[in-house]
Length: 240
View 1 (cartoon, rainbow, N blue to C red):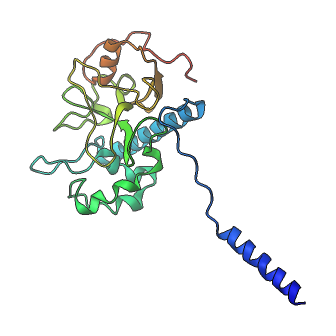
View 2 (tube, rainbow, N blue to C red):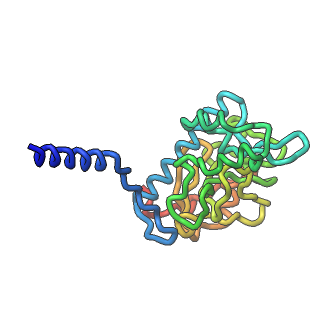
């Protein structure tokens, strides 16, 4: 009887231990590992969600979300923080002090809480960094000191880049993005070795070849150049 009781007790302990054991973590993608169709689809879907968030934000605020600056011109928080309520991250949004910079004691500790949608699927990046960026600078859709709405983009939403996979990652809460000076195309494609996705102003997402024509990319980045786009935009032939 004692043996049966001891065996039952041991089995119960083993079962309890098994139930308490944490689930195995998913293996993190290798920075230089193979590019898979699943990764490409996932990033494309992420950009579609960002584009939808931009549209909903614009509908509610009559302007596109943008990097936030203080009255004296000091950087506060990025557009990636501003759209959190529009990507089902309202609770995280409420933890930020919106009138403080991204690296204040309160806001800095939230960098590690980066939402999964911003986390790189591939490419070399530190924890808390992302490749998803907009185009700032005088000739980008997000120029300093001015805010477009979807209705006021001169070249139209279907002809203008809104968000893309940049060549180099940035801290997701920091108001830091690609800068377009009208002459040199910013580095793109950090996650997929030069191949990159971009969300257009109309919400569609396209994947571009590494050797896409630079002049065409300039037209797509600049929201007000008035240029007529060529038929060949440099789309990746394997895009589906």
